[in-house]
Image 1: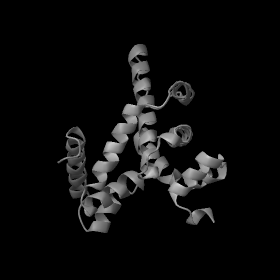
Image 2: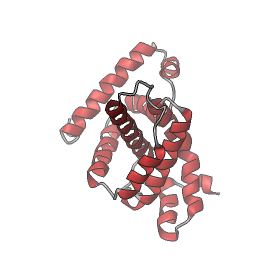
Image 3: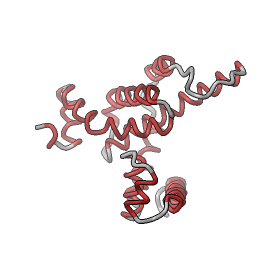
Image 4: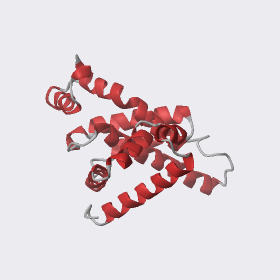
Length: 192
């Protein structure tokens, strides 16, 4: 039954009734794309799984701050923030210790998890997320599709290129240009 229920209704059930099964349905819907995004960032399956889990925990804690839009995209952005913070923390540790091991070999997910539980709702991050979601909705449909496939669904560039009958390099260039347009839209208040 829950498979036919919209994300918005599931979120209402979680907020009104504290229905953990409704949130579990959301997790089932979006865990794979969030995991794929985390894996591209972390380059390690175990770390990507941990980042995905932390992202859903954080999303659950901040669910009342979600103001609509694509729920999967929102959790993916949370996962990206967590992954980037984790990588930055590892980079600082490596710099301080002079370690020469590859990134990800001694990342402490537990340390980051403790940092996240100390954080409250970040209004600035929420506003940035909303600005990004709005900018994405203003893209032409072909560009939105590329963004959805690559960042939300985790479709490899080569597969996207095959679907669109283009080369992988063309898709890379298109993604670069799309990101630049999104950046300008966000910097100028989505008026471009």
